[in-house]
Amino acid sequence: MEHNAMTASSNKYSANDPAFDAEHGVLRNMLGLTSEAALLHAESEALIAAYEEAALGYSELHTFTADDVCRLHKLFLGGIFEWAGMYRTIDISSPGIRWCHAQYIDQEMARFDTLLRAATPLSPNLPHDEIITKVAEIHGEFIAIHPFRDGNGRTGRMLANLMLMQAECPPFRMVLFDTAEMQEKYFAAIRDVWANVDYTKLTRLFAELVPKP
Image (cartoon, rainbow, N blue to C red; front, side, top):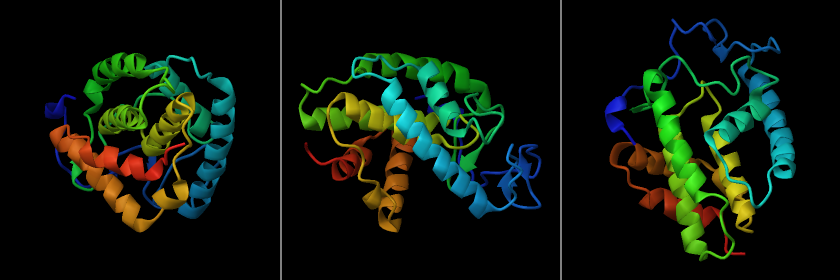
């Protein structure tokens, strides 16, 4: 990806961001929630519902596009945030990483669209290692762009699970992913994609999360 569109930073939310409720430390939402715990709970419930609907809505022969990714994001967060499904218009960051500048998102997602169309539908006839590699590369590219205001990781993992479903592989073992150790390994792997366009760590991590069928 175009790494010159990114710089290092450490603040995900800015006091100047109109979507951020600085008093309560949460993003402004249509539910009027001001507690981080309550908002996370609402998002978790919405994610479960989004997975169920997406699994029924996309076939094993579907060619995924950038528009589908926007639909998945809106399916997930559309009942919580007005901007769900729309590319962000402000710059955001995570510790040590400033994601793709907002002005470059359209062109980066157009490039991602080409990659995603070429990778899907993901054939179950491919060797397991190749399936994992393709899913890791698509996921890494998407996360490095971080096109949405929030919910990028969860949307990206939903897309990855839909690709795995096409390939007749089991989904990510989230009970493993949710551990502190795995979260640390995941962020290190994403940082390698962001900084070096290196998918080695992410592919290795996904191999741990997706057992051979």
